[in-house]
Length: 185
Image 1 (cartoon, helix red, strand yellow):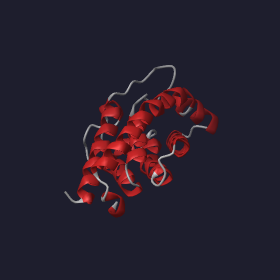
Image 2 (cartoon, one colour):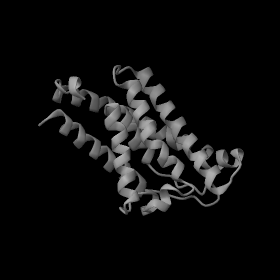
Image 3 (cartoon, one colour):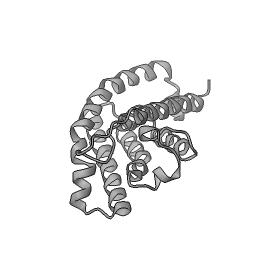
């Protein structure tokens, strides 16, 4: 199988994981209007196991399918309204966050680089979320932080902790399966 096809299959798999993470959403009234999801877990996997272009493409495919009508956004939502709605800013950031994280970790499998990559990816997602909340709902910066970031910090740390060993295992598996892919990815 050509290496580009292998990476495309892996990217599709990560897009599916991101979609599954969105469908398992929980909104906690009184805590935040933004649903708690596992989507960031998918972004972490994309950035941790795929080359940069495939990491970004995995998230673009996920977003594209949702915009086109697949019910794969948080709580089964779908369509362009989600992408341009108050929570769209998080979605806007997913491809960029995945790409940058992958760029940081692609040539080094070191734990420090992975840790820094996850932090930067999460900060980009938070910035996108804050921007979306502020632009669409006209929320103040402090309100956007309290509504769209603060309640999620612990939850997102948990996702990073869960993604960490999976990324390590996937690196070992991919290296065993596809030594020639390193040159063509």
